[in-house]
Image 1: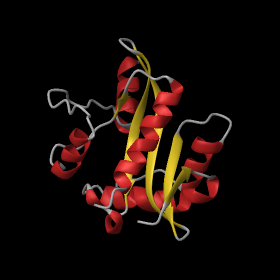
Image 2 (image 1 turned 90 degrees about the horizontal axis):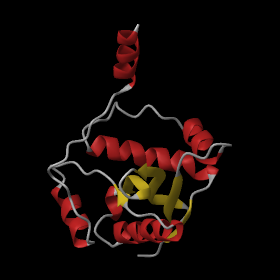
Image 3 (image 1 turned 120 degrees about the vertical axis):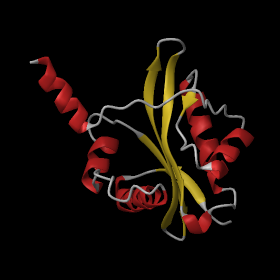
Image 4 (image 1 turned 135 degrees about the vertical axis):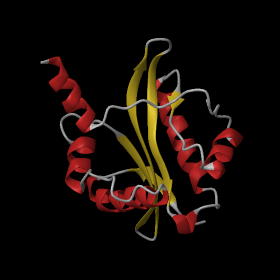
Length: 160
């Protein structure tokens, strides 16, 4: 394949958001995306940079992304979280996912992190096999726990 991988720029965020929506559609959560292009620009390129993003580009079209952000493990120290590794459906199977993951691992290594972590849906066997092939450990005995915006509001109201 003829593509390049680079750090994302503000101008990429419209196409990045399109890939985020493509992933949401694939994961059967089409209406779940609330973030906007303006949010991505503010959060990724503003005064408080909340994430780092790599993009894969071919013919001026963003065909893949890897978005990471810093976390801290009380057991390990500094880590990064891979929020999403997305390859456009038409580009899957050609090594682009591996190339993006390579960039994430090199980035984490340059930061000296102790771990890179992410989630994968339990029914997404192709992704699970891909990650395991790359040497990642899929921890099937852990459950993801979240408080969404409504849950946070309800929690705060219960404190009164």
